[in-house]
Length: 311
Ligand code: APR
Image (cartoon, rainbow, N blue to C red; front, side):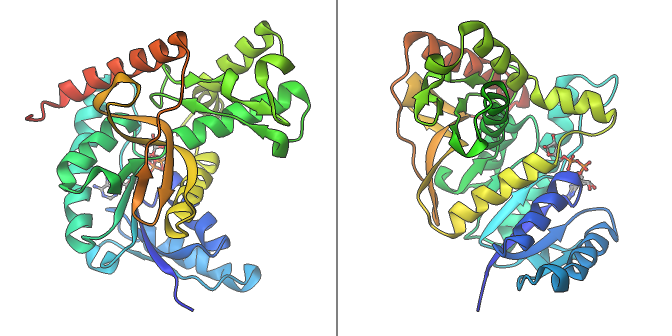
């Protein structure tokens, strides 16, 4: 049996978790890459030690050299640094922007047919940068944000209603940050739209917890940010891509006219398959929902402008 090959750049918390979930699910052979010597090798070996227990057939290997990533079907990018005290957003943009440039150049040189899945924050800006630097068609460059935000929304909806999580479908679109746009009208509990199930005040509280879900984890952990739900969200997107499932997943993709937006990466429902982003259908939104998405995009466009990319 042959598996797909997935490279995960950045063997930190998110990258290693994504790699392990992919291994446990038997989604693909995984290569972990990091600048830190020993870290990707050590974590890969540790995961392989679990192989006999979990009986997975895929392999996980670690390296500091992109030669090991050659011919990957998907490259997941989690390399980067989180914001540290005293750093402005622009400082983070500059540092992670440089990392994204270097990672994308090396990864694409080794795997010219790969689909790139960006995870590094600020996500929407880094996904746009990855697309521009890669020279790839936008269908092959996307980001993981909406799947995680929607998963958090689903969790808080299940918590507030007492419904089993399996009965909850939740959708969050927009930027992967404070301006994200949870859509109660398009989220359901056993098929019923959320506004039929919860009061306006209850929905407002669920939305608030969703928007600050990542920050809540950061404040509890004290150092570092979330990685279990992000790692599993990455694995689910890779599974849809490699399995060519055509599942609709909220994904950070290039908008080309949808929602009145152009030349910006933002999470919206997108059809995923082996070629990456197969289609970005435009959902019917109310005027308020559309305004919120456009406001969210405005913040991303401002940050992209700060990167100083040539047109
Ligand atoms: N090439 C490869 N790896 C790199 C590079 C680089 N140029 N620069 C940094 N790294 C590695 C670090 O050595 C580290 O192992 O990226 C890893 C990042 O891991 P963590 O610090 O644990 O961060 P993590 O929590 O995994 O988050 C990674 O994902 O969700 C986002 O906001 C998060 O942007 C952050 C990214």
